[in-house]
Length: 286
Image (cartoon, rainbow, N blue to C red):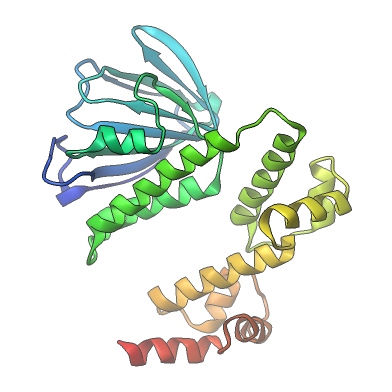
């Protein structure tokens, strides 16, 4: 079992706060693999709103006493004082992200993003961006850096906007298959970017021809698969240069390059400066 979470002011107590339109109180994630069952039951609910995102696997939620299976690609919105009753089972391999929020204008904000208040289960689509935004909120709540509360609101609003967009773009056409496959590919690349990736083997594993995959991936992302992976590697390299004291050789290995000289050449070609010079420039700015 994996758990990671962050709480506003390091307090786990639910609260209602109308001092601002939207306030993120806590955020976290569960990944159940080794334990058989993880139940949650709050008969009287909480004072705040809760939004849960099923990133993979499936979960069981109970609404008015009736069980409902919620699969990956959906979110669950639970309003204040509404009973919270749900279970995760290890056999279903669920990965779930959650956020609690409050504020003086929450209902109007949700309506602005076309998020229905008369239902609990909401189609959101599966996207690595959701996981990224939840993880960023967890990190902000844990580190409490300058302006973190404002960033928390921005991240949550991005999630709302992505939900709205997923509804607008959800069409039962052949194109939905392409979109789902390309989104799956993007998630795969984000999970395995620092490994040796064979586009031919990947396409074959998904039952696609290489040419079909290359054509459609570039149409959706505006990049070839390897350009997309390169972008992930370089962005993560930049993050490591900015936030850690790992040397260039260590960073090279972390992002997937055995040869640090080759990594440095690629970094300079994409970012305009070498990794070492990038870190020097950053140090001079501080």
